Image (cartoon, rainbow, N blue to C red; front, side):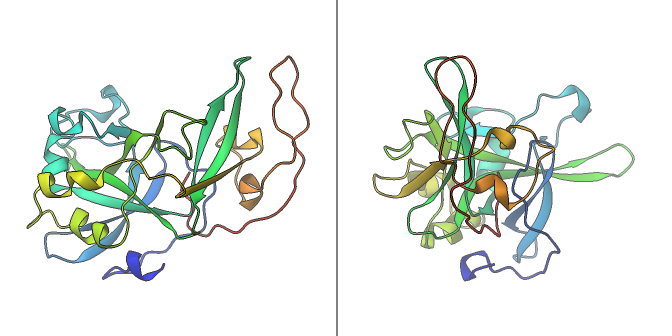
Length: 235
């Protein structure tokens, strides 16, 4: 990982190109020993007070506007903030005819993404422990608003250390970082609808396509146009 994702431990992982909710993702937070630690955590937050995760709704995303007031996220907002490293993420654009065209979205400067997140550690009755995370979403910035009305909150530069530092940085001090990215920051391109199935995996999923879905019945072919590397992909 690049320096902004440097941690005090090593974690074994392979490139992923199509992670779905409930699957493991790499998350970084500061542990009780004040070490910056990389963990494999389930994407879908389970608060520590939940008795049975199977009976609790899947909390994949936390809305920035309301998360500090929600019982499921309130403790994590104050004490358990994390980042999730990625090269990019997918979002689906709803077309006039109702079909959904997937897009792969990255930073325009090709820097890796530090997605702002919240984590929680759930302890079961038999001592089992599960680390879980949720990504934080904000209203879409101008570069991606035509694709979807929400986007992940991204931390950049010094914001990353401040966001992770729950010991000395109150949420009120880092809340101004949880905002849409400004115009000229994000880049996107359409990709194959193969990404719609979590069973599909591989770098071909983020390759731009030369033809996209039309608005009428029947889809046009999704031809490959170019290749692009992404070693930190999460979504």
